[in-house]
Length: 283
Length: 318
Image (cartoon, rainbow over all chains, first blue to last red; front, side, top):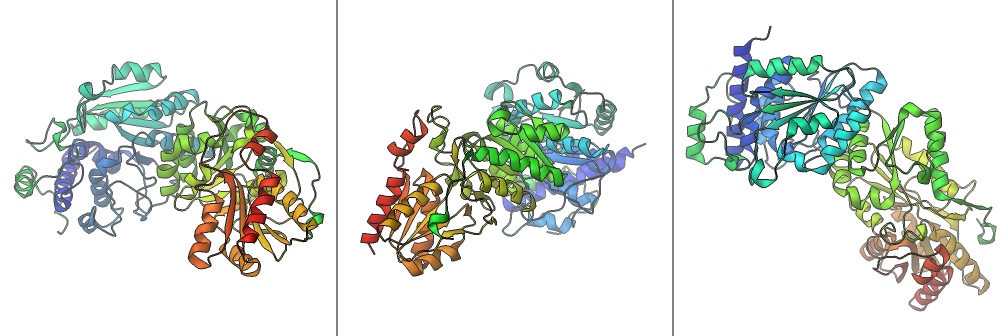
């Protein structure tokens, strides 16, 4: 049984990391990062079997890919907090010569990153390729991939969706961060996504709805439900309801903090709303 | 080798060399897998598929997804070969190749058929003349444009043992074969015939045109140093500099736009290291059109006579 309080403390500390990282360089994407803190914490601290002694090929372990690379702050925080690299390194985010590039990259050799992402729509294809390889090798471990909801406007996502269903790639779990927001506004104003559950179902996917991606218990239960559906001939998508900017009262539920850093006053305000549970990384 | 000993032993398409090479390398390297975007027959991939049905993925008409799948397969340790036309291997998927393959340093072999004008009647929508330029601009990308069946087969086999992304460019038509028993090493120029008056460097289908032109020039007493540059990136700079130090002038020949191709790479090298008169045989910044291969070659200035005339021009500039 998962220790919910322990996991929530990690997610809260990651939220502090996110605010401090983007504030420190006055750039980055806090909104989606904050909204996915429970998901990342659950995945890396509870759900996945993975080795912090990083191997690129990920043989014999579960693997995670981030397609919406702009939410790198939450991924970096999680990777550091779980042990892939020192938490002190979070202070180098987006600075010259850093391994923590604005968008995730393999180029600087940051442990935990297996593909560059940032230009949207590519992650599901990559994750599906990895999942195929696991099947060829008889490796029973799973491949997780996270995509944004606005990202589903990219055609390549649906090419990959068609492929994964055709080849019965049932060892991949896609999670869509269904916060309803993208950089120019709500999805419904920018480009309607339509009936997402029906779309995925009609593409031959097993659809799982996560009602509250900002509730740790719900996140864990839904991930377990999704995992139980693997190996049955269908790829699995979790449509994860989250709130962009969750955890900070003036950031929550709006697209306005998608790609904007808080100023000094806002940073102080934001941090006052988040308990320092595990100790901040040194500035 | 003596120029007169470079003779055609028959005709086969370079894409047949790819198909045979893929099959051969797959028999000894279990990590080789292949993907194709609904062009199995055109890419000659049937032999591979028959031998290893479980190592092949038909992806349908979805090239962007194919590049991402290949990046994923490579991440997990496979050596994926992607197969589609050159236009759909580059322009159509440039961002996927850039981010998921090149920037991410994935060991993917992008195998591209029907490059250049010589696919013929399908016309300019399919005749990419920009692909070498696009691919050589990507950091870490190796770009290879073999000249005949045998060299394409050699290259297809060699790239499996070369770690990193590769763009392998070949074509549709039956073409003279003349490199049997010649060596092939990625990044190493192939000296076809030594000479003293002028250097001719050629890549892809145009190598044979250069051979024919050099033979005509030899009859007039002009000694051509004929070099095959199959690897456009990394360029064998030493071989080119050494040759022009001897001959003092150079002609480049390729089935590609004059912008972005082999000629531009050679000109850049010479401008930086050893300024030398240069003439380029290439397509003059235009799209192609439908037509028979010999007619297209003639109309767009890629024929034996064009290499011959360029050589005469450059000799006057020495």
